[in-house]
Length: 256
Image 1 (tube, rainbow, N blue to C red):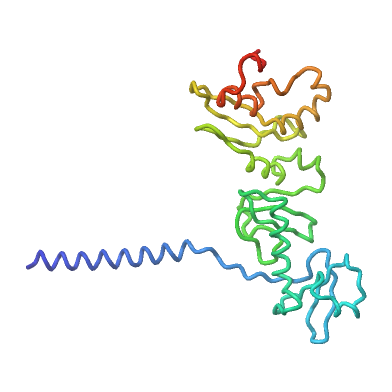
Image 2 (cartoon, rainbow, N blue to C red):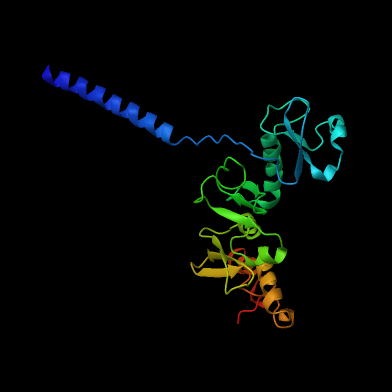
């Protein structure tokens, strides 16, 4: 009888512990809700007040006099921190839609959230939620990359979104493939390094053709007179064809 009583009590205690443990775990893993609020119109927008006192933001590229804006059918306009209407979205919704389109162009799967900071004229992508002002990552510890204003700066910066996107989109191959961004020296173009194990179990460190061409063009303008890049085994695509796919033989590559 005592054993049965102890068993019942033990079962109840176990159920209580599991209930609170699971409840706490579910609560603790929920993503924080961000209530976005804009203190001013988005960058590139001008402001005016409508007859109801709402703050209306409109794309300055439209260059339309204020008294004619009412004839626009949601043509680059949004209402600042007000309820969306059939003719005009809330500016937060407007910006988020703009960000979604920009993320496709500039962001990678690693850092999918696009942002712009009008005060610093900076742009980038981050992994995770954006802050309340939609001007950057919600947390300074979030992985983030930068969209630089010039192609040269994007190519020479290890933290550029251009390089991160190219890295993420490059397809790995084989069974032990790893890839990473690599920079050899200051102000040198970023290389995409791909390491794989060939069919004989030998590790091969290579670099993608596209990133090597950028690197050589910057540091060694006459490299084409000395190297046939389509025969070089340090090029990822060549190494893959020779060591993994076996579509190239020794006569097709430079073994020295």
